[in-house]
Image (cartoon, rainbow, N blue to C red):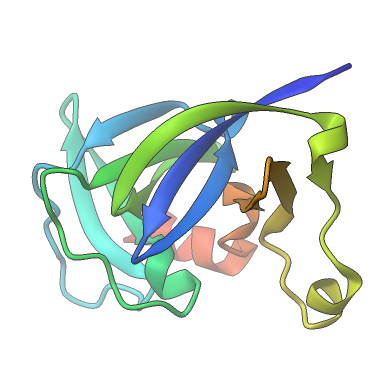
Length: 149
């Protein structure tokens, strides 16, 4: 039986999950700087070990109110198309383990509406956790925009 470690994160009042295998590192969100002409989905840039990492607003991508930066805010860094990209979360609450049997595929209705960034729905007791696919939160064109930012 295969197990997945799922990082539970908060966006507004909602809880989502991301497979830990997609996350290279998690950063405290000390400062995000903006640049002129940034794409709408981009919150700004964070510096890590002397390199600028673009930071995507997950809340904006999901149609939610944008994250208000606090001491609990975190940046989940993933490598997408060979590039480090940060994803901003309001908070990270915990890491849980879910078996393959605890993760259901995305319901057909959501797939039909073109919601490509959902990986599945995890069940933990009575709690349902929507599992996001960080690689699909941005399309190829958007990743290209980040490479020239």
